[in-house]
Length: 358
Image 1 (cartoon, rainbow, N blue to C red):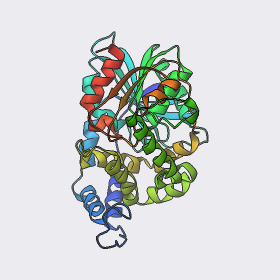
Image 2: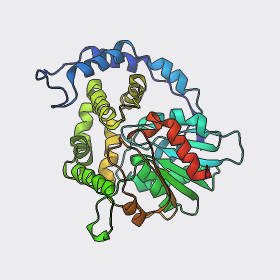
Image 3: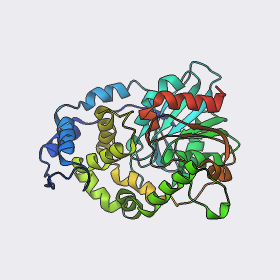
Image 4: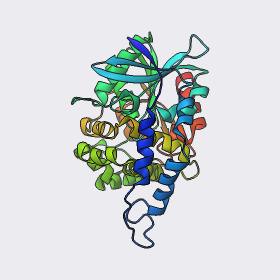
């Protein structure tokens, strides 16, 4: 059963958020620290004060409610999704999957340009946002992919494409693996390629430089990643109890993973942070990192890749081609990890080029 859904956050939750922000206990900071010890205090205080006194959730809630939202239950889990049908009845269905610390909000600026050529399905990953928290073990990217296959079947879509970045890329590739007879192709804007000494490949200087960056990231695992992959419940207590804790946990990723030439507005970022806070899904969203094993999912369908110059790492094409049937590869001129939010025009054009050849 699929039911219409409307966002309606209780006023008591918004009042509680404002009260908690007003009573924040701030740590001290070393003089002139900048980013050396973590997120700068002055910048975080600025964001928190705007969140408390200037940001208007109700305005964004009203804007979001102009979209067609729905929920359904799959595999015992509530699934929230936005479903926008193209004016073209013969348009290709396309399921768009977000990552962490994003949400379905990542795709807001893609809806209008893509809906000309695609029927769009934009779900919230179980454990994130309006899909609500998960309540049992096992919600890894493969299980999410199986849920997406069932969702598309319920919507009457028997052939469709998939697109995503971050965890959304892994879920989209897994969807191609679990439903290859239904997925026409997978487009991703994030595709980690691990060094493979046994491959015996002759790589260009540029690709070797990319591999050096990948090796550095692998050898210096970011603290947020280690915490979420090992003890998501532990960090979940802090993020669920402190709005400033939730704010900085996400704001740091937006600051470090985006292209300075394509910034994401504080307004859009705070809507994303608010979504995590108001749905209480910090811990359950973090569990996806714990649940998902570090393995490559075989994906037999055609794959398109968009590489962003300011992403966490950049894919090495010869390594990617050993694992996937790469049919399309684009080196975008700008953008970072949140491509759909940073460069929606470039990403929409690349998605269209992959699925429609132009």
